[in-house]
Structures are given as structure tokens and as C-alpha cells.
Length: 117
Length: 110
Image 1 (cartoon, each protein chain N blue to C red):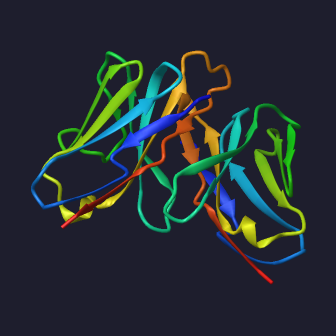
Image 2 (cartoon, rainbow over the protein chains, first blue to last red; image 1 turned 120 degrees about the vertical axis):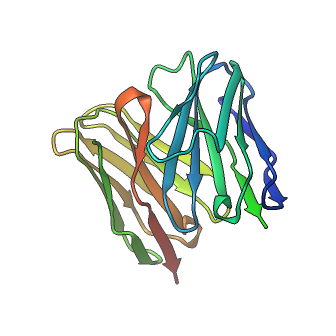
């Protein structure tokens, strides 16, 4: 149980284009999903928290207009990197919390590697 | 603001020997999580520690939590090559957000 998928697993795009990353909870309903980015040899940095049916809450320093997050259902959240530039190249990982989860555990997706040329 | 410090950041282990990774955090929390990350992969959950004095063991790994000292340890017994990875601790902060440590890169050599 508690499986989270991400799609695509990797993507290469040209500078200036937009890229959408999907995060799905496959066997549970996720009231909250989190989006992280990770640069090589670094830790995970929380970008935003998304709750189903409401606007995402972004961490300080994260551009809302650049990283659009939509949590349209209890099993799907999307992150759109708009007008991507090479500095947006990173490993993006989502996580999800189950509405039944009493221990506040987050279940992590396999990650999406974005390379912007 | 919750801060999480992990040390060491890099650990070169000899096979067969024992080692400990430390995770200190700055504010009160009763929940701490340990993860393993292999190169190019996402996080794999190792342990969920939910209360003071919690101790969990799986194979050669054992984790403990002391909420009064705001300290968790991940102990590795008789290291083997398969344990080479980066290990992260994460503390459950406000609003259900996790604060991660910087990670400990473990390399096990013969």
C-alpha cells in the first residue's frame, strides 16, 4: 500500500517551454501533497504544499508564477514549470499524505528528473 | 524555525565495523523519519519514530529517538557494501511539513 507515482520519470526540454509533472497516489486518497526539489549532492527542499481543492502554499523564495501547482483531486497533483530555464534543471520529488494516516508519514514518489537545455 | 543537523555528512565505512549517524533538531517534535536514497533514485522509507524512547531495528540498521535531547541516531552494525547510500533524517515540523537533514553519504569499502 501507500504507492505514489510520478510522470514523467525524466524530461528534457528547451529553454522557454513549460513542463508538467504529475504526482498520483495510487492506492489511497491524499489530502495533502508536497513538492520538493533536490539539487545534486544536496538535501530535499520543500517547494510547496498542496491540499485538494485549495490553492497551494509556497515556501519562501519559491516563485508561484513559475511553479504552478494544482491539486485537482484526492489522487492527483500537478507541478508545471513555466518558461523553464537551465537553472530549473533539478530532481523534483512529490510526496503524499493519506487522509487515514495518523502518524503524519509522507509517502514519496520516484521523482522526475528535469533537464532544461 | 526548525533546524535539523545531521552528522557526519560523509562516512567512509569499513565492512564489518559499526557506525552511527546523528540527527539533532532544534524544536520540539515527537516524530522523526529516516530515509535512504540511492543515486538517481527517490527516498526509501527506513524507519518511523513516533515517541520518546522509540527504537526500531531492521537488519543491520537500528534507529532510536530521544525527544528530550532532540536527538535521533541511526546505528549501522557490521557494515556491508549494500548499505552504501545517502541517509536522511526528517523531522515532522509545523503544519505537517518535514524538515530534512543535509544527508549523510555512506560509502562502504572492503
